[in-house]
Image (cartoon, rainbow, N blue to C red):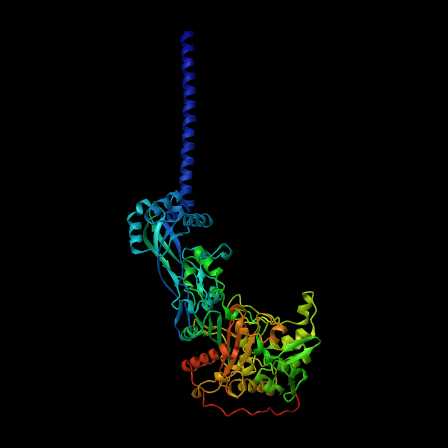
Length: 629
């Protein structure tokens, strides 16, 4: 009995243990299923939207759409910088496991140079992996077909169509319009548009100054893609905002006509003297701006930079020259304002002026005799202006020059434009050197340290013609909205008495239209009216006194040592509309090389814009004198 009881007790204990374990297991399973149920409920009810979004993002791909760059137009609406279609191959790094392998496969279909592969891999590292990177632009139809046929072997590669910059006028407007190029690291300012393939930014000229307006704003497209990232269909599209069109004041046909007249080292600027609009800005030599769009080769860059004629530099805005005798009206006005000379004061010119043991020569070796201010301008007598400069001093001359736009920033919409140099005593002292009277005398005829641009000389001429501080500009309108005044009254007065300005204009009239004037041979043809102007020539190599006494001829010098030739003019005389400046590097004389070009330029301008009224009466030989104001 006791044995049976023991057996039953053990059996009951085993059943108890089993029951407890079964209960524990059941509770564990119940807890597990409860946890799973709770988790599933949370995933469905609380986090379901998040996971649906993630799933949707795997199915959808959003991409930015680059907007078309705005056009640049000339004053007549002619496109001088536009766009054309560009088929290209792009690489989306996140859609391929091995960028290098994809590029190797691609290069067997469309050859890639090592430097191209390096550029692509650099762009992939620099940008976010979902941003497309340009692999090859300007694809031919045959290249596109080969890429599409081999698409399964090119993960991450897609064909896209964009636009590229087109410059219909080529080198004729290159310096003014500028060019575009792919953005560099320094251009990245957080704008995602700059990361898109095919995007270009302005690098020079109007393209650079108005880059933000021309660039526009990006659009977006939403695409449905499969598991490997291939596009299935387009779901939504939001177009971007195209860049704004910029209209210039320049006439493309006039620009081309003028460039056809000039040789290497020559620049011409034509302005509307009433409102400062630049009608033409021709400089020789030039370059093809479209080359920058696809990338400049090392050989091309070496060719440009080694060319002594500097084709990449706009000589009209960045060429620096002493103004020579074209500056004499500024010296005369400074003397009148300082009351150290009057229009009727006569100065005797024996052909030179002596200061101590230094002799300053007049261009006319035998001298001009006794001359007054009007005659001094007409004959371009150096001795007369040596004396005026000696009386007035360099600082007053510099102040007057600044009022006429010389040696100051003209703020024209062409980045990098030089402001030039008009020296003063303080400027010279800052160099640790003293300014002496001989320096002043030399600067009285526009020689010495002056560094001025043809654009500044045209501005000076426009201000002489109108008496107002007209400011040169090349932008006429943006998206059809005018950006500047169109009348001379919109510009402030220079504060110079009209009688003084009239005297300068009469002297310039005599230069071109009166016997003995230094540019008499360059008068306008009769039906086109009358222009007024001033010749100038600038030595680039000093001629010694001994050479002069031996009868030295500058024609015997090598071309690069010969004087520059300059001429400034305005027309019509009685109602000035156009101002012109011409600089011919090593052209010898303003009357022989620059003045005829200015005449031909104004003939072209009148024929294209408007004919002037009938020729006015001959100006009086003398300006009445009276109290100075």
